[in-house]
Every structure is written in C-alpha cells, then in structure tokens.
Image 1 (cartoon, rainbow over the protein chains, first blue to last red):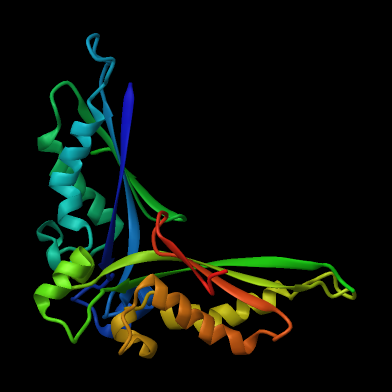
Image 2: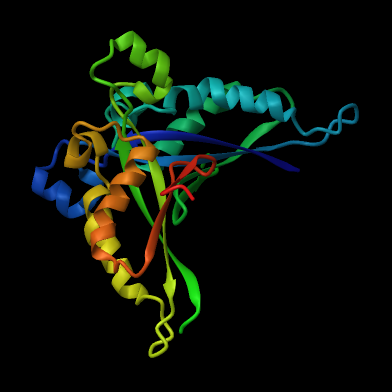
Amino acid sequence: MYLTRREHFNAAHKLYNPDWSREQNDVVFGKCANENWHGHNFELFVTVKGSPSAETGFVVDAKLLSKIINTYVIELLDHQNLNMDVDFMKGKICSIENLVYGIWNQLLPNMPAGVSLYKIQLVETPRIFVEYFGE
Amino acid sequence: MGEIISVFREEHFNAAHRLNNPSWSDSKNKEVFGKCNLPNYHGHNYILIIKVTGEIDENTGYLIDMKILSDIIKEQILDRFDHKNLNEDVPEFKALNPTAENIAIVVYKLLRPLISELFSLQIRLYETPRNFVEYPAK
C-alpha cells in the first residue's frame, strides 16, 4: 500500500547555467533566467510503501512522516532562495528535476522503520510537475 | 436596460519578493515579518482574479470582451510582475512593501484607468491557496 504526505514551501529561484553567456541563458531559459529571481509556491508529495500495522492500522504515522519531511526538506527550502541558500543545490542548475533528486537524497536515509520511499512528486506550478521513483 | 452581471478573469504570475520596512532595525523586521523577511527572497505562484461588474451590452451579449480584458491584464500586470522580483524589478514597489495587500492595490490602480467607468472593478489576489486579499473591500 502507498501512503502520501503533502507539504509545501514558498521559494525563490532562477534557471541559469553559469558556463553560458547571458544571451544563451535568455534564449534557453527565457523569463526563468531573470537574474533577480522569481518564485513559486512549490508543492511536495512524498509517497512511501508499506503494509498497514495490525496494531495501529497505519502504513506509517503521517505526523512522523511530516516531521521527517519538515526536518530534512521543508525547513531547508521554505522561504529560501533555492540557488543561494540550499547546500544540496550548490553547483546545480536549479530546475525542479535537480531539486527533486536532491529532496530524494535528503529523505532516503531518514525513512521511518517499516516503510520504503517510493515516489516524490514536486509541483512547481499547476501545469508543471516532476515525479521521481529513485531510479 | 441590460442585466447587471459580474465577469471574472483569472490570470497568474510567478514572482520573488521579501517583506521589509527599511525604516526599522533588522531585528524588528525579523520579529514582525518572520521568514518573509529572509534576505535572499522567496516566491509565490500568485493567482489574480479580476472582477468586472456592470450592465450587459444587448448588442453583443458581453459585459466586456474578455480577450480585451486579458490583453489589458497581460500588458499592465503580467508583463510587469511575471517571473520578476517584485522588490528589485518593479518600480511601484521600490518604496512600498510588496505584501499581498499592497500588490492588490497596485494592480487596481494600474487597471482602473483602462476599464470603462461604467464598470466597477475588484481585485482578488491569492498569495498562497490559504491567503488571499480583495480590493476594494466590499
């Protein structure tokens, strides 16, 4: 069975490749390359896999899962500048593809007993989101 | 006489901002604005809903041509705010704290002159799904 916890964070970022010229960044990334940043209300869906406990009926205590997500992800990202303030994004292009990979690596070693991390969905806007299954 | 009706146009813009009063100390800004005061900015997917109220034109069946309204919103608001840093890139916020409240008022003032005085105008702005403002207040 899969259980999903939804969280959110509000953050600034820009898409910019420092190895390219300003012009090439503008051509490839368009408005997303604004050097003064732009931002989003990101939504994060963390899905774990497990079996319901006979004692609690839970796959996992959702409050515990929320605490883990907040400790290892949300507190690092919320109201931050993803390019400047987040250690695991340093040296990386700040796309949601790279961000979801970083979030996976933050959560994987910190999963509670009895469940495995199955999927992360990261929503940048209502029309753009990524899913990562750890492959 | 045509019926009185309200029409709504929804748009969105994604922008960075921070909340700060430059006449206050750093500690007071942090105390009042909390995380919203962090120095490297954060951001939102803002949702903007423009409400226009008036009498339906019996010739067209429209209150207002929504394509024209959309073009006005794009030129006056989205081109100014979308994928921008409200504090750094938007002159209207050089000396004005870009709270949702102040953004809604700025949007109203930019649009009001371009929409017929025969129509009333109201702005609803969502900063997050849980926090939104309306201007003018009813």
